[in-house]
Image (tube, rainbow, N blue to C red; front, side, top):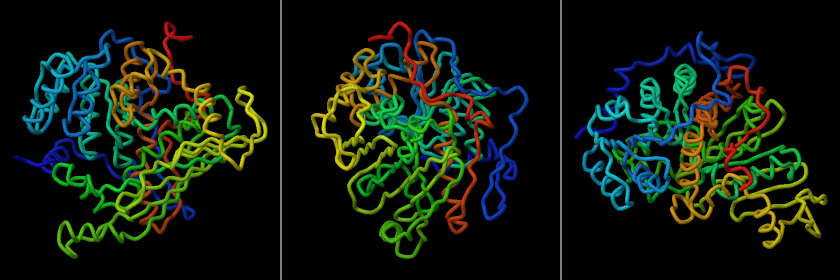
Length: 471
């Protein structure tokens, strides 16, 4: 049985790599500056792109580990979609997923694929609209590009890419093929974060000036879940924020990144690998490897319109789980961890007639609940989605909200909630943070994956079909 590492090597040799100087960087005026290539002839921006409505979305699911089998449990609960093909390196996982579909009352997938070439065969089917990728990070881009080139929309687990080359490959392929490429960033669909996004869009917090996000999650119980030890090996080899999107995604939406503002300059700094090295020594033998990833990585970003973003990554030290999620505005403040909290200034912008507002104190539980009810995002009111998500599950229901919204937008011919530029921007931190750290925390001028179109759209809109407006 061959490992994912052998498959990675096979893919690299088969498809090659983009020339480093095309998407590489240079150091200029004490800053790292990345090239932004011109848009190739014939490509068009994907901003606001919507495909023709798909009456029934046919899905090919690749990768049937923990996350993939979770998707197989949830997707049958969406009436406008069907899983028609399954693929995993291991055939026994395919059969296990078939059993999951049957237990959900769904039909068995008509296509079964395994082995090294199975993923290609699935992508080449002519009865699939959407390829749903749940495989190791290093496989995401190559598989996504292949799927789009074979006429499929693509949904990719996080991060969508691990290098700037890969980010550009996703952008260019999506623009050229006119196929959606969405990253499955589930944290954008957490109820608190969605509600705060709606509040931000309605001006309740005033002008958002600073945001924070993180992935602080001690992975000690999880390292052995990753087949072939691929995640530990990646962390062992790379500095920087290797898993940034849970933190950066929701706060970028609140700042309307590439929908009126853009991330301009990044600086990243890490600690030494104190506990990381201990884990490596215990796992592989003392001194066998120098563990690269710092126990804590902090990244600071300034936007074109003068806002700031703080992102953190920590996966080896014992600490409570946190994505931080903070929005600081001129009129109010929101913070998710350790407890959901909202603070508002002396001016009540909610329309609820709140009393005794004090910006130095969180709203009472009763006040917060009233605000949450008032500003719950309209998308979760369609088909009573929030209630249904609690029943179906998936990280508290946010996985199901994400998948429902993906199918909903494809079915109704609407622009997706996230686009390929989100996937590229949020994933770009994987390389950009490492480059900054390896150059002594030097500032990095971030690439503009929209190629100058970042201010052509006025704010983020999560679309609702006309038939569902007012529900």
